[in-house]
Length: 132
Image 1 (spheres, rainbow, N blue to C red):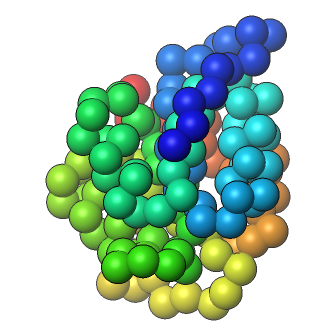
Image 2: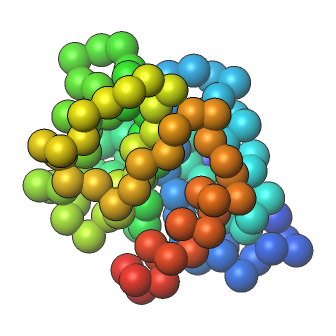
């Protein structure tokens, strides 16, 4: 897990913490970098279990952005189900480079990889505005 600081020049979003859950290190780092540049505080997790631990430690995460396909006993879809049940106030954005059926899991957005960061950041502004 990695905790980052928001860029001072973009401190307007610093109160909002985003958790990025992605097993591919370079993709996770690139996503976190873009979000930090937009002024968000970013916590990184390599898998669903790390993500749940972060949330259980009360980090005031507003949005979880999770890859759908991850190794281990829990993928991004199962993570979304756990989050909706155990952390209902947390917004969930899913991402994948593969086609996925999302009908059976409640979420707050889906982005196809490679992610268009301008669209993602605009979507986050909307979600966080709705959630406080």
